[in-house]
Amino acid sequence: MMFRDIWIYDITSIENVTLNWLGTNIFSQLNATQCYYNTTLGLLEVYENSRELGLFGYHNTDTIQHKLRAGENGVPFILPINGTKGLEVDVMADIINSSCYSPEGNPGINLFDSYSSDTLLNRIYFSNSSDGYFSDIYYYENGTLDHASVELRI
Image (cartoon, rainbow, N blue to C red; front, side):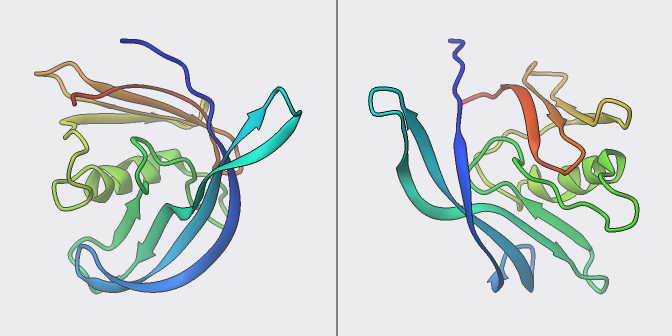
């Protein structure tokens, strides 16, 4: 089944939290409220209360130093950017592959056995060669999701 869904998020907070995910560490957690545009009233209305939209961490003493979790989404909606270099999709593709889509990273998300990136298009592509599912993600320069095509097995 193919469908198009437009999700609108209002960033509500960024906070430091201590979690036991891929080891007990301190993370920066991005929280957001999911909204929708009510065309009848012409208003943006709350659809779902504030929840985790992204979780980011770097711990140089861990086996997996960089960690990124995409909340309950199939793809990361927001990527952290390097303060001096900007968005580095080539670096982020490796980080996402090592943490976000690993069995320890987010149970229920499909495992991808191949990934690539394109720094000119700000694109990250993940695929599973044996089952054919994929995640093709494009980002704006500020690290927010532009658009994505995703096929996951449920």
